[in-house]
Image 1 (cartoon, rainbow, N blue to C red):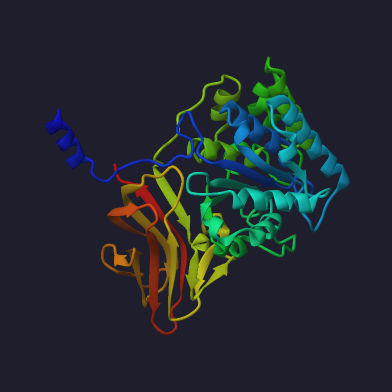
Image 2 (cartoon, rainbow, N blue to C red):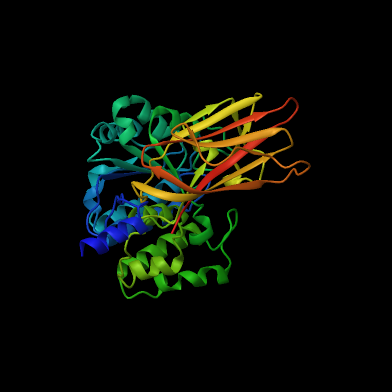
Length: 407
């Protein structure tokens, strides 16, 4: 037996342990949620109760310590505020939540901010806070600014949407995620959940055929599921996309497809966590440090339509690797996506050590490129960095660094 164990360790030395927060039975830490629903898009009228239903399916209602809603401060619609409140109150009653942790930002903003501050200040390595950002950044930022800086490193902010991140052509937000990230929190960006939980486009009522994938809610025997259908119908759109972040938080699965949601909520089949995740994408604009890089919102071919652009002959982006549902120590194949012309040289570093050989952008190609670096060992907490140096007249942009778990 000892010999067999030694052989196994030699074959798989690169995975030591996994980090939850949910291990299939217990949730390590607490949950906070901030969302809009009072302007721009009605989808939160459905997403909020669906997210609360997801947490209830995993029996973690007691882990929710804060939930604020109607958090767009620059614009509002009182009728929308009431509709969202109907969704929230209905979910509290049906799914067994403590009403005292819910705050309407249009009615009691100061109390909402104080609640977030308390949640952050109670955080520790053994009791982290997972803060889901399903609305713009202003309310979360105002609260984070008032919190204990020493506690912020135990806070994980989760987002999936460029709009939630504070980037809009129709709104003027005072803060976006680039104001939040340097405060010391950990930033987690997952795939845009509209791909999975929205069957009608933004800006118009859903067509009859776009409701069909959701008929299992309409026809459910359980009254709670029919309530979710009614709240989605109230939006006139077939969309509960923000709820995909709740599914990710409990499973590590970024693809919260409708069939998966149905298995969980209707069939009560709780999925095991995807631990460790098969890949982790670190968007360049989410790196903690951007030295000689500026945010670029213009390139629609970039992931989330955001990337960073070199603003000097040389620059560096760096961030600690601290993501949920990843191995504490693992071997990955890395992919760096960039856009650059001839004369730019790149290097990927882990804790200051170069990984593979530096590479140069190919000449004469103005398209996005991906450079692969196989067999990189990464431990939780290590710094991941990309350095670029360009000759005079050359320019470079970075989209993301993706770590693909090496089987």
